[in-house]
Every structure is written in C-alpha cells, then in structure tokens.
Length: 358
Ligand code: KG4
Ligand code: ZN
Image (cartoon, rainbow, N blue to C red):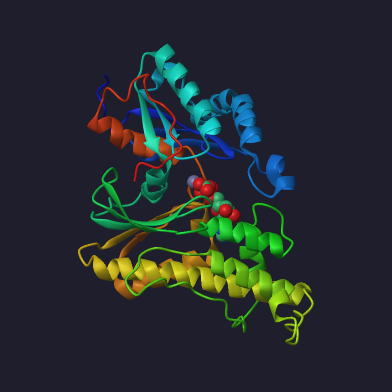
C-alpha cells in the first residue's frame, strides 16, 4: 500500500496488440516519457497482426522499452510508486507478456501493480497533460483497430457501454479499405492522407449505416464491401447469368483511388458522428465528449470534433496524436486513478484477460 498523491510516479506498460509501450506519468497527468515500439514492419506482409509474432516481439522488447521510458523520464526504478499495466482486452499472448513484466517489476520493487482496461485508458488519453479538469458525466467514443463503441462516463473509472460495432471496428474497416486501394498495413493513416489529396466533394456516395432509428451501435462491413465493389466492380452473380453482367468498375488509377478514399472517409466519419450525436441527444446532462483510439488521429474526425465543439458548445477532448495510438501514458494515467481508489493495487493475482471489462 502506498500514499497516492499528485507527485506519485507510475510506470505504465502496454502490450495488448502490436505496440510494445512504456511510459512514466506523474500524478496521473504529467507525462514524463512515452516510448512506443511499433511492430508494423513485422506484420506488414500478412496485412494484419499475427498473434504469435506479436507476443514474441513483446517478450524481446519489453525490458529495453521499460529502460528507455525510465531513462527518458530521468527516473530511477526506486522512485516509482506503482506499476500500471494494460491487462485487458487484447491478444492474450501479448497481454501476458506485459502483465508478467509488470508483476515481476512490482514484486521486485515492493510497489503495487494495478491492471487497467485498455479501452477505458483510450478514453482517458485526452485528459493527460494540461488543461482544466473535465466535467463528468461525459460521452465517450472509442475508435480503434479493435473497438468502436460509445460509452457513458460518470468518472474516469465509472464507464458504461451504450453501443458498439456489430461487425468490423472502424480502424479495421480502414485497414481493409486501404488494402483494397493498395496501401500498406496499417492503412488508416495512408487512407487518411490519400483522402486529403482529393479536394471538394467525393462525388461517390458510399453507404452510412444507421441500423435502426434509435440504435447506438455501429456497422462498417457494408461500407467496406461497397468500397470493394466500387474499386473492383460488382462480381457477376451466376444465378443471373441470363441478365447483362454488371458494368465494369472504372480503372483504379491514382485519381480514382483518391476519390474512393475521400468517399470512404466521408461515409465512415458520417457514421461515427451520427451515432455520437444520437448519444448526446439522449444524454442532455453530458456536456463533455472524450474521444480515443488510433482512429482519433484521423484528420477528418478531428475537424468534425472541432465543429461539434463549436456547434453544441461542448467540452470535446481529442488526445494529441502520440496519445491516440496505443501507448502506455494513458495506462499509467488511468492507473493513477485506480490506485487512488485502491492503494493496495490488484496484487500479484492480476491476470491478463482478452475481454473488455465494459
Ligand atoms: O488504438 P490503436 O493504436 O490500436 C487498437 O487498439 O486497435 O488503433 C489502430 C488503428 C488502426 O486500424 C489504424 O489503421 C487506425 O487506428 N488509424 C487510423 C489513423 N491512424 C491510425 N485510421 C484512420 N485515420 C488515421 N489517421
Ligand atoms: Zn488501442
């Protein structure tokens, strides 16, 4: 058990997917270091994360990354008040590496270890660093490669899910769409850049999923398929052999790729904003919005959030770019609040869990 105060130094560890990360955060907000080693080069040829490759790479990298985070922060191991680790949700083999490292460090230093839900940490990412404290309740929107969901947040630790994707996560749809357009994995950033080269209206309308009139769930698989058909043409249906075949798609030259990227980006963001605004309409007591996850780095999403802030006079928190992608600063930051509520931490019985807690 430690006394938790605004100078408490927490080492955060994150290894839930394909980023090995460590960070030192003081008092839950002040980020002293934030080191992220991405494995994108290892997974690129498979166009997706290969779990076995990911967990092996975490095992090789975790200790050098922790060392780098301490060095960058100018902090010695004995100065740490606690270790926070993203212990759920994620790839089990990857999570196990981070949890084992965190428990070993905590045990050897005699400090508490605290488990942090990665999704909740994404929502906390916009609250790191300076700025006035946010007023709860707030609506949370997580947009990442593995998750797309809306939450009602009573505090950083009190989070209830309002809706989630029924199929692909928005980041996953970006990665698949990018692959159709010939961009390297992970394709979100590349698709975003390609879309930005298109000026004006896309001139192609891809579907924006609504589900039903009150739903707060998302669906991105229809959008993904529409993009595929727009890029490659609609496949001929053998049951309709007597009908003329569907027209061939226009050639997928650079201009068409940029146009399709812009149309995809527009539809994806319209779908996110539609449900976010629906959630806000249903929760008039929420005057703040917390956005997090890799797709929060998206240029159009950030513009749309600025517009939302102005239009509805809301306190909208979108993390700075280094805190959008998977990182350990958000883990250490939220870990501080978990520790303040339970200074003994979770103990060495803490286990990795592939499922989210909310
Ligand atoms: O949060 P994150 O680092 O990992 C998960 O927890 O899933 O999110 C990674 C996802 C990837 O799908 C990546 O393509 C997407 O975030 N992403 C973007 C952008 N930057 C990253 N998607 C759209 N636009 C971007 N600028
Ligand atoms: Zn994430």
